[in-house]
Length: 125
View 1: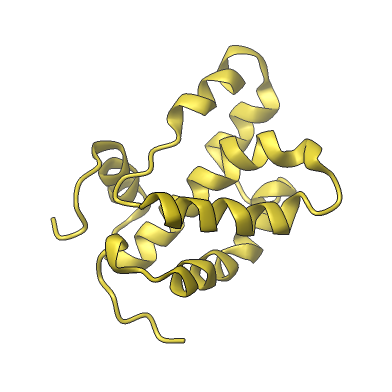
View 2 (view 1 turned 90 degrees about the horizontal axis):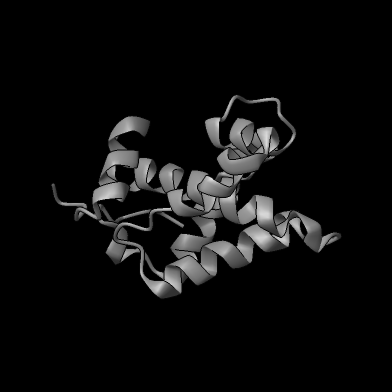
């Protein structure tokens, strides 16, 4: 499937799912602690820092349907054996996936993607 969109809001359900699966190996490396991720480190640190992660998930221009599809695929990937990982998935891997997809679709750096998601800015900017 080719990705012929340049705005998050134009992603179909199938394209959204495909993009999540394309992130799978990088997400697995984060999950296993093989690739540095600030959210992963904060989660492992625990306490208030871990709790604050729940307030750091920014959805930007992702629709409710796209968010549901992303969390569904992540749950299939990481929670098929143990639902105990759902908290980690929602606080660490979900926001990481949103950033990765944003970077791919809109062509921004990680820092730019994080900022745009935080601001809820449209992809056209």
